Every structure is written in structure tokens, then in C-alpha cells.
Image 1 (cartoon, protein in one colour):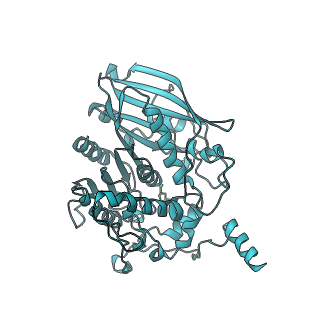
Image 2 (cartoon, rainbow, N blue to C red):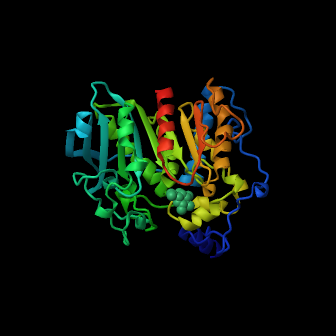
Image 3 (cartoon, protein in one colour):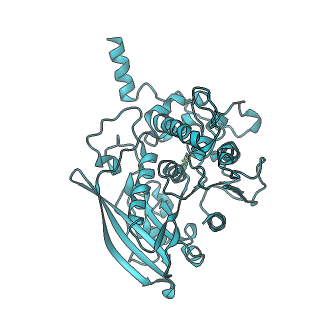
Length: 420
Ligand code: GTR
């Protein structure tokens, strides 16, 4: 009876509730960072050493499964149908320099239809070109000044940033995010840009995983290792990639996936799950993204699970205030992307995301790149503000706080030029 009661508690999630004081005080003192040892990406759980790329494949699988089980949850195989509906095509965008397209992707499965609106920009050239793919926070209309790009109907979080007092997108947000998505510059550098609103994949609130992509798999029984929202957003990026493989303007071998903050966590996990992403960019992704959990600097595992119970697998709660017990740490998430290039960016005032922990993660992932004869992070100490470093791992800490800014994009374009 007692065991039955305990498993009932585990199943209901009550067991892993964060044991956090209400008045959580983040640590911002370097001297208060606990001493820790990071799990070695090149050491199998049984203690054997990885000595070459061939063994790395097996070790990679081991690490990947640990992230699935303990952090993000396991995403299902896609066995549904994908249909692309053309909403508009404007080949005379930017005085004829570019094309802007609206595509509604329909994810069909089990009698359900999940619509995802893609906003696509690309320069008018004859060759297939590289492109950036990234989820946006407030809807595609925030990347457009004109009404051809419709306001989304999906639920919006933190919508006051767009001048709305409820969770519905409206005209007040139109064009507001263009500075964060400088498509004119991206196009003039020869790249395409594909963006979609992340809430169409999975609305960012805790509804017991009923809606969004989770709703396409009603037969799935949930357990402590089931996929959370971060995994849902990441999985959705792969469905967009499925579509991009059918588009003639883009070179599918050269698609960079990028995301800011929670969507940076999703971009990293997308890059780990799907090797078709040739380059991966994490902008201020912080806890559960590029930052090392063991440092407990700024946002911690316990805090993030308390604030966002729907983001990760329920298992992640086991490590609330127990980061040292994690069988992996976030440098191994970067290592899962090797030998493909990965870029991590911080903002010096964005202490909540632990800029130094993001940098140290790049350093600790580097041995895996070296296994492939590649330079990972070229430097061992955190570079000065606004001094990017680019090996096969790139990193910068720029001036200012949390945000995807033009400075960040300039580095991503340079990094993509270097590797594509
Ligand atoms: C914060 C959260 C961070 C980060 C951020 C964002 O509230 O604590 O982990 O994801 O939101 O996505 O902007």
C-alpha cells in the first residue's frame, strides 16, 4: 500500500516538487560558486575512454539518452503528414532584391491538424543559399510592417512587451521585433531567414501537455521522461527542416538553427536531436541551455523547474538543489553538436543566464571537437566584452543585457561565413 502511494505521488509529479524557499536569492558572487567536477564527455559511464570519432558515436548516444531521460524528455518519431499551403509570395520585396513568402505548414496526425505559419525571406539569386531558422517570441507580424503577414491566433506569453494586456496577439506588436531580426542585413549578406512563432508549436503555459505538438500524439502515455515544451519547440524545428528540404531556394546542407533564451535552449536541443542542422546558435540560453548547471550561478535547476514546470522532463526535478548529482552537464549538450560548428553568446549584464558558465561550457565541450582534429573554443579564459572568438565553437559576451541584438547577428553572420 505504501509503495502504491509513493508511485502515485511520483506519477502525479508531487514527489519532485522543488524544495525551494519562496524567497529564492540567486547567487551572483563568483566566490560563492561551489567547487565541482564536470562529467568528462570522453569517458563512458563504465569508465572506458573514448579515443577516436568512432567510439564517440557510442558515447554520444549514451550522453544523448541521458539528456533525453533526465533533462528534456524523449520526443516521438514523426509519422504524420506535412502539408505546405502557400499564403503569399512576394518576389519584389526590398525593391526586387528579395522574396518574402508566407507558408502555412499543416502537421497532420491522428485526425488532427496543427497549423504553423512560416515567414520566409531570401535574396533573389539563382543558387540555393544558406539560411537561418529561428523561432520568434511574439508572432510573425512583429517581423513585418504590413498587413500581408497576419497576426497569430495562438496564445502569447508576456504579451505586455508588445503593448497588450491579454494573451492575444494584436496589431500593437506589428513590426516591433524587426530590430531583433535584421532581415535586410541578413539578405544583403546572402542568407535566407525563416521564422515562426514558438507558441504555435506549443503554447508556453502548463496545461498538462494537452495542446500544441503534444496534442498530435494523444496515444502517448506520459511518464517522468516524457517530452516537455523545450523538446516540443526543438522537435518542431525539425518539422520546419523537413519542409525546407523541399524548397529550391535553400541549400539544406547549410541551415543554421538559432534561438534566444528559452528558444536558445530549444535551438541547442534541436541541434543535438537533428544532425541536419549544420550550425547551431545559442543566444543567452542560460540555465538548461549553454550554462553549466553545477555552477548554480543566477538561475538554478530548482528555480527554473519551479517557474516553468512544463519546460523539461519531470525527471529534471530530481536535480533541484542537487546539480552535482546530474549524470551530465550542459557542456555535453554542446558536445552532442560536434563536429558541427556551434556558437554561444552572452550579454555581460545578463547575469541570470551566467555568462561565465556559458563560456566554460564551450571550453569543456572542446575536447570532443579536438577528437575530430578541430579547434573547439580557441581560448581558455573568457574573452573581453565585445571580443568574439571563433573556432568550431564560437563565443562572445557583448555589452548590455538579455536580448537578441544586431551585434549578435553580425557575429552569427561572420561565423556562418567562416563555416559555410
Ligand atoms: C526567464 C527564464 C530563463 C530564460 C528567459 C527567456 O524567465 O528564467 O531561463 O529562458 O526567461 O526565455 O526569456
